Each structure stands twice: as structure tokens, then as C-alpha cells.
Length: 116
Length: 111
Image 1 (tube, each protein chain N blue to C red):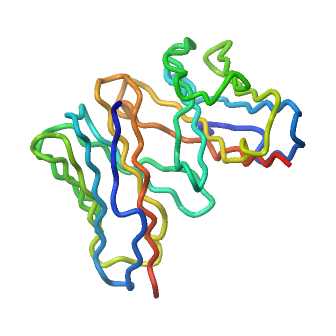
Image 2 (cartoon, rainbow over the protein chains, first blue to last red):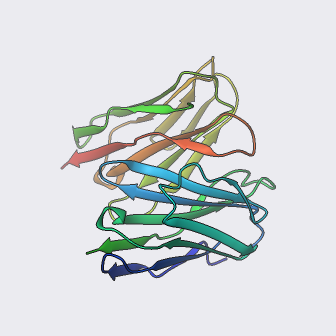
């Protein structure tokens, strides 16, 4: 398995622009998580899905952030409009509640976002 | 709310010295996981502890889960430069629910 795939790996954009981050979880995993990591705030959980359904989005900073999971193999995190304070590394992770890797979170390589 | 605290935030050690990071929760955890993130990388799963008082070892790494399932520790014996990175604990309060990540301990190993 290729692991969790994220795209793009790097994104530089200007304030006010829309940013869309993409994630392909590991096949067969039923949980998907979006995290944001900054030096100041550490690793923050933004939202997570179970079987494509959003379970807890209390970590989403504000209405400018939205996340979707239209099917089991794809999720997006959208920021519209983006602001400089959104600059961070955004990680997607997936996990399964079945099998020997029960609840182990596999992280993607991350998207490094810089908003100018 | 539920929160997992981790200390210390930073640790510098001479190569060959031991290192320990601690995680604490005010309420009982269902289980706890440990992750390592190398500089510029992404968190990578190390281990999961489920049982009260559980101790697991991976070569020079020893993981413990407290009897009350409210704290955990990661101990590295005789650190090496390859141990450099940030170590995170992540606890869950209910099976199948989200994991709460600690703030991480950044380990620097001085050759």
C-alpha cells in the first residue's frame, strides 16, 4: 500500500485565495483525520470522519475552513478565503478499528501551506 | 475538556545519556499511543498501550502505562543521534473515538 497520500506537498498562495488540500487514505481504513501543525500551537485535530461521515469538527478554526469526504478514498480540506495565520503544515491521517493495526494512525507526508 | 499534557517540551542530552518524556491526563484513558516525528517529517506510530500497568519495549525504548491509566512514559536508554525528533503521546478516552495528542517533547542529541 502506498500509505496516506496528500497533495499538494507544498502550497504558496496569497491572502484571500482559496486553498484546497487533498487526501487519499489507506484503502480499507474507516477513520480519516485532518490535523494542523504549527510551532506555536503544536498538533491540532481539525476534524475527523468515520465511514465518510464527519464526527467531530469542533477543531475547525472558523467558517473559512470546510472539509468533505465524498467517498472512502478521498477527502478535501478547503480554506476560503485564506489568511496568513493559516500558514502551517496540514496532515491527513487514517486509521482502522479492525485488524492488527487497530486504531493506529497513519499520517500522510503533509501539505506545507504558506499564505502571503 | 479532555486534555493530554506532556513534559518536558524540550530536552537536550549528550549522546549516550538516557531520556524520558511523560504524559498525563486528568481522567482515565482508554489507551495511549506514542509517535515520533523527525524534523521535517510526519508523525510515525511507535506503539499502543492498552492495559493498566502495561510495559512494552522496543530495543532501547521502554513504554509504560500507569496503573490508573492516567499517565504514560517513554524512556530511551543510551540515546543516539538517530533518536532526534519530537515524541508525541496520544490518548483516547473511548475506543473508536479521537486521540488527543500531547504537545510533544522535542529531543536533541548532542554528539
